[in-house]
Length: 286
Ligand SMILES: NC(=O)c1ccc[n+]([C@@H]2O[C@H](COP(=O)([O-])OP(=O)(O)OC[C@H]3O[C@@H](n4cnc5c(N)ncnc54)[C@H](OP(=O)(O)O)[C@@H]3O)[C@@H](O)[C@H]2O)c1
Image (cartoon, rainbow, N blue to C red; front, top):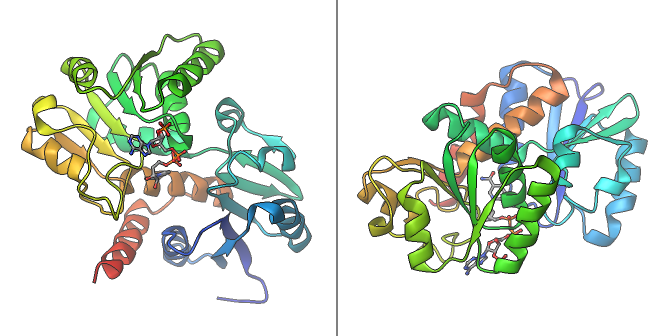
C-alpha cells in the first residue's frame, strides 16, 4: 500500500469499537488490490458537524454512518440519493469531488440477503418485528419491492406513525400489530418471511426471542438481523419449526458491499467480506 496516496474511508458513530466494517472493507480493498484504507472513528453527537467539516477538509473519499448519527447527518450533506431521502436516514456517504452525497444501503442490503432465499419479493407476505432505525430502512425497501408488509412492535403507536409514513410516501397499505402472541401467530400463518429488526436476542440477552417454534410453520424464511450471536435463539426456534434461516451477517455484508460499490464503482467481493466479518466474530467468542 502506498500510504502517501491512500484513499481514506471511515465509519463514524458512537460507539464504533465493536464494528465489523473495518475488517470487511479492508479485506475487500486488499482482495481487489486497491490503495484504500478504512478506519473506525468514534464521533460523539456534539462533534458531528465538526467531524463532517474535518472529512471535507481532509478530502476523505467516503464514509459509513452508524448510531446515533444516521438521521442527524442528513442536514450536513450536499445531496441525498433516492434511497436516503425515502428513509430519511443515511448510512453511506460518497465524496464526489467535494460534494458529499448520502445513500442508505441498509434496506437494499437486507433485501438482497432475503432475495437469496426467497426469490422475487413482489406480493410476498412479510412480518417485520420492530419500528426502529433498522426496521425503517428494511420496511421502505420491502414496500418499494412490492411485499405485503405487517409491522409488529412493542410500542404500537410508534409503528402506526411509521406505517402511515410508508403509506403516504409509497401509497402502499401496511398492517400494524402488537407483539401479543395471538396476533403474531395469526400474522405468521400466511407469512412467507419473518424478519427480526428489534434488538431482542442480542448478546448479553441471547436467550430471548419474540417468536417461538410453535408459532412458525415449515418453510417460513426467518431472518434475524441481530448478529451477536450469529445463531440467535429466534433462528434456533425457526430451525426447530422446519424453517429456513438467514443470519444477521446477510444484511450487514450486503449493505457493506453496496457501499463498497458506490465508493469504488467495482463489484464487491462478497465472499471475502463475509469471511472477514465471520473471522472477527469468531475471534470475539474465543
Ligand atoms: N445486520 C445488520 O446489518 C444490522 C443493521 C442495523 C441494526 N442491526 C441490529 O438490529 C437491532 C435494532 O437496531 P436499530 O438500530 O433499529 O435499534 P433501535 O432504533 O433502537 O430500535 C430498536 C427496536 O427494538 C425494539 N425493542 C427493543 N427492546 C425490546 C424488547 N425488550 N421487547 C420488544 N421490542 C424491543 C424497539 O421497540 P420499541 O419501538 O417499542 O422501543 C424497536 O422497535 C440491533 O440489535 C442492531 O444491532 C443489524
